[in-house]
Each structure stands twice: as structure tokens, then as C-alpha cells.
Length: 271
Image (cartoon, rainbow, N blue to C red):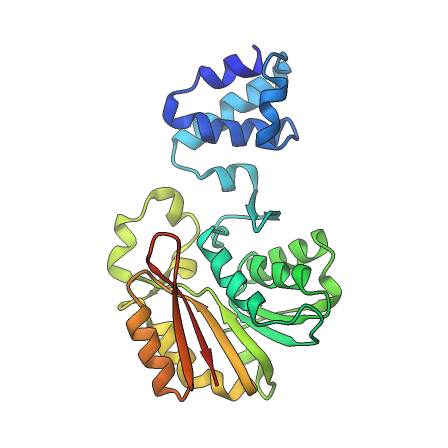
């Protein structure tokens, strides 16, 4: 079957996912598929494509089917139980990059790195930057090491296993960044099955959803250099509470940035 026919054989709601899966199987970028629409799909690829589409229909995300996902124009390896990179998090990266001079020698720390996409992207965009990142999940630690090697930044990225600030006791950084779990416990059952595959630990922030920020705000000052800053991804309705927590913790200035949908998304605070 030709590439075009194979894609048109799918229900309309599955065609975008089908393009991503087929492009992966053909080792092409999705945007390159129109160039080969009239080519015959190799039989083994067609069989595998059909198998993977069935898995997608069973509620497994495309990211977990193909084992990778794009973030900030680069591809990162992903796996179940670890947060898949999302476009919203690119705003967090952009706000941090605005505060790091292109040739500035700075040292940052990321709490809960997951795939490592935040730290690795920052390192790729700022060649003199050094980062330390931790995660409580041992599989995430190994995944970050794999992604660091994939993007050639392993010499500037220190990867540690541990909870929050525990692995870096006694150290200070120019900035601390994090995209923590911030969904309230009560919302777990209503999440789509494909999202749940990323793991409760990566998504649920506690009964209120903002327990991480409460603990973070109390402790982070011990790990910041003078005039350091923090940058956090936050839930769409958490701007007010995170602003209050950071101000009460002594941050002189706090700004809540909204995403393209007009929702609270990133909090930046300066010590």
C-alpha cells in the first residue's frame, strides 16, 4: 500500500498520530512524508504500523509507542513512568535562558529532571553553563544519562539520585529550576489512561497539588548564591499561591508568566 493510502485508511482522529508513528518507522521527519506519499510502504513497515496503531487505540501515547518525543526542536528518549516533555515546559526554558548570558559561566540545579530535557536544553543553548540535576526515580536517572550522551552534554551535566535538595546538601547555585508534579490527588482518576502511564509520582503533587512548592520555598534559599533566582513550572491555577509562598520565603521579586493560552504557567523569583 502507498504511504498516502496507508494514512488515509485511518480514522480521521488517528491520522496525526499515524503520521508520527509512520515517520518514526520510516526514519523520516513527519514533515517529509508528503515527499514519499506515492511510494509503496515496505510490507514489514506496514505490518508494524498496523500493530502500533492498535496499541495506540488501546490508550498508549504516541510518545511511549515510539520511545521518544520532541522538545525545543530536539528529540529525547522517553519511557513509561517518567513525564513526557510538553510544549508548555518550553516557556520555562525560555524564561531561564533570558536570565543566563550567552557567554556567562553559571551553575544551575534542577530538581526532578525526568527525561533531562530541561537541563540538557539549557546546556545546549548556553555552552558555558554547567548543570546538576536529580531525580528520586532510578529509571529517570538512567534515562537522563542516556539523553545527556545522545546530545553530547554529559561532561557538563551532573546527574544524581535523590529527593529534592537531599543530594546537594551544602552546595549553592546561581539558579534552581524545576517542573515538579502539581496535579491534585483528586484529579488522578479523571486523567486519560495515556497520561497515567507517566506515573503518579511524576504527576500528582499531593492532596492540594502544591505541596512541592510549599517545601521548595522553605528550603531553596539555602541552595542559592546571592542574587540567585528560581524558575518553576506551575499549574494553571497556582500562580497566586506560588507567588505568595515565594514572597513569604523572602524572595524580593516574583513574576508569574502566562502561557499562550493565558494560563499561569511559570513562576520566577529573585533572592
